Each structure stands twice: as C-alpha cells, then as structure tokens.
Image 1 (spheres, rainbow, N blue to C red):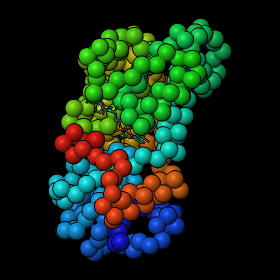
Image 2 (image 1 turned 180 degrees about the vertical axis):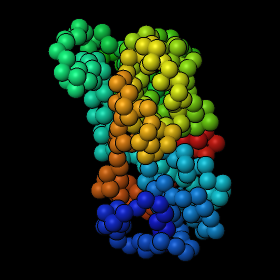
Image 3 (image 1 turned 135 degrees about the horizontal axis):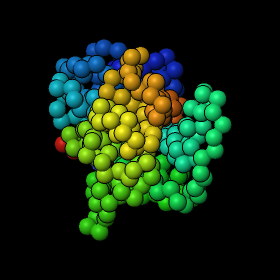
Length: 293
Ligand code: NDP
C-alpha cells in the first residue's frame, strides 16, 4: 500500500509509522492509495484519483475540510488517541483546580509580592460545564468529576429532556470548551454567550481559536463579569507577541499544547485504519463531511 504523507510529519512520526506498518511504502509525492495528513497545506491532496482513505493525525479536521481541493467522496478519519485524551483530561483538570482554588490569582500576587488569602470553596460547590461530549469532552468531564466537582456536559445530539445551554451556563463556575470547529460552533463564545455565564465565572478554551470572539472576551474580563480565561488556542497561532492576551492579568496562555498526539500510540491507530481501508473493512473514527466533525 502506497501512503502519501502530507503536512507536519516529522522524523519521529515517520519512524513510528514505519514501525507500525512495515509493509507500507511512504511517499512525499506521487499517486498513492491513502493519505496520512497533519495540517496539510491546501491543495496537498489534489490530483489523487485512487485514495481510499484520508487519515488525519490531528483530532480536529476543520482546516482539512476547509480545503476546496480536498478529493470528494474519499472517506476521512480523524485521530483518536488514548494518550491525547488523557493529556486533555489532565489539562482540563489542572485548569479546573487552578481556577477553583485561585492559583492563577496567587501566581499573579507573587509577581507583585502581595500576601493575600482568598476565600476557599469546596469542590462540590464549583459547577463545571464541558461543551462537547466527544472523545476529549468525555475524558475531561470524567477526570474532573472524579475530584468531586459537579460536572455537566453539552452536546449536539441533545435529548428532549436535556437542559438548554443558557440554563447550563448560568449554573457553571467554570466552562470548558471542547467542541469541534464547525459552521455551527464558529464564534459561539461571543458577547451573548459571556453575558449568559454567571458573574465571576471562568472560561477555558481548549477547542479552536475561531470558537472565541477575542474582543468580546477581553471586554467581559475588563468589565469584571468574567474572572479568568485559560486559552490554549487562538485566532492567529502562534499568538502575536503584541496580543493583549499575553500580558492580561486575567488570562493564562498555553501555546496550543493542551493535548499533543503521541506518535507512538497514534501510529498504531493510524496503521490499523490504513489496513482496514486496504482490506475493505469498516473504518474507525469517520468524519461526517456535512456535519463538519
Ligand atoms: P468528537 O468528534 O469526538 O466530539 C465532538 C463533540 O462536540 C460531540 O459530543 C458533539 O456532539 C459535540 N458537538 C459538535 N457540534 C456541536 C454543536 N453544534 N453543538 C453542541 N455540541 C456539538 O471530537 P473530540 O472530542 O475528539 O475533539 C473535539 C475538538 O477538540 C477537536 O475538534 C479539536 O478542535 C479540539 N482539540 C484540541 C486540542 C488541543 O490541543 N487544544 C487537541 C485535540 C482536540 P455529539 O456527541 O452529539 O455528536
């Protein structure tokens, strides 16, 4: 099987992929039976008439689907990697603990040499809402719930008895975004959304930068309606050095590092899907192009 590699696939990935699928021939150009992609430049898969699978090494496929030259009709699969889900759960838990116990405020106070103790609440008094209940959202919600926080989730396929989003927002002290970026979710975290969040609550964006209207967040923080924001993803990445988020006292910045794909475990999953495509067996983690995730 000839597999085209496109995008950010470094020497470690190539080593792990070759070990996971020694029978494959890996190409950087030319006609292939399948493509393995990591944030490929637009047009990277144009003129590939034989592809049986486009396997992403990234969990989010928003940029891939935005490429107008993406071959039509070829199945797309996204990365689901247990090591990445575990890492995401750790980041979500760290953000929750830090926001709940005021550790970001204490870090800021240290920089200013200010000795001031904040009130302490119990974990069961701090409601957490996780937007998205897929691989990432579920892993995060379970991990946080294990620490005693009341956790609620929000997803697309809501049942008729599920609580609507405004009521969920009003009840949460911490809102964690783990939605995929689609036409429906782009710009969801805007002024109207923040207005529905409880006064003094905090937002954690681990999804995609385009979920968030950055000026609206700055306004909500500066007015004191929101207490803090933990941001891993941004409209422009890397985050420009002049951006207000870097130095804002109520913003904690991560460099899109909430959960990296682990080349060791992810290569095994990618190889299993490539073999399934080769042998005509069902594929795992198919993307629904119309739905956008
Ligand atoms: P999944 O496809 O497994 O889950 C997506 C979830 O979002 C599902 O529960 C889905 O609902 C829900 N959803 C989708 N659209 C809507 C909508 N319009 N309204 C409400 N809920 C919606 O994705 P993953 O959990 O694997 O990943 C989620 C995202 O996390 C990725 O797309 C990526 O952008 C981001 N990510 C970020 C990383 C980082 O380092 N910062 C690393 C990895 C991923 P339903 O269950 O009903 O289908």
